[in-house]
Image 1 (cartoon, one colour):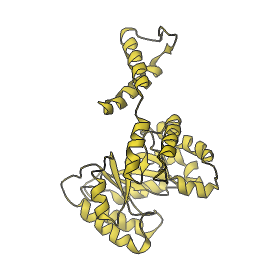
Image 2 (cartoon, one colour):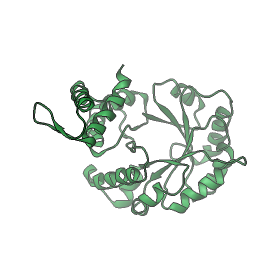
Image 3 (cartoon, rainbow, N blue to C red):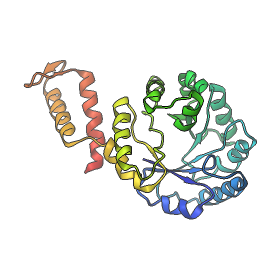
Image 4 (cartoon, one colour):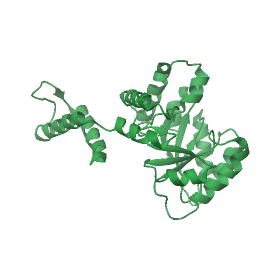
Amino acid sequence: TWLYVPGDRPDVVAKALHAGADAVIVDLEDAVAPDRKEYARSATAELLSDPQPPAVPVHVRVNALDSPLADADLRAIAPLPGVAGLRLPKVASRADVIHVAERAAPADGGSPTLHALVESALGLEHAFAIATAHPALRGLSLGEADLRADLGVREDAGLDWARSRVVVAARAAGLAPPCQSVHPDTRDLEGLAASCARGRALGFLGRGAIHPRQLPVIEQAYLPTTEEIERAEEITKAAATDEGALALPDGRFVDRAVVEGAQRILALAQRLR
């Protein structure tokens, strides 16, 4: 779970660190009004200057890469000890990632972890090139609100191809499965759960949130069920005693790919214990 919080609300950021999310994303972009951008940057820099690590990893979403605000964000934020990663909005090309990686790299080498947000048709077409642009890039995901507007999509199902495209690009690049884009209605928890179930079926893992009340719904949706855990345990137990392909007593066929899927389920299930 990734909880977005506006960078110009340091009091809200402080609370978010203890809200139960796996990571907090301090947003300097869409959540901040134009006349609050400089304050958001300075407040975030102050928060992340503390050498004591935050309670959970903190990522920062900088402003659009084609704006002068982005360079100012990178200068102020990238070198700070409390920054676990930078989230890059509206990435449209491999060159965008390389520019940030080079711009954000400290003098002593290396660079902060980068996560690219694909939010346009052009970015979607370049998804694999973006995902493989630089070793510092560790994540790829969709920004669905902007993408929906760019494509003129009216129904949610119209984004399913784009979602699958990003899942495939991330996997092909050896990245972790993408997290889903945020669900904009913070009170529609039933709709959030249904949307998460759909996202999990498409290959996503986890989701961005814009309110703490969304966190337990997302986590529950992405954790395996008791039935899934029992099936996974049965598969791994059978595979441990019989190498190669085999059939379970109920007729299910098990090979290496099935075993690897079962192992992923059991790894996620550790969060339930």
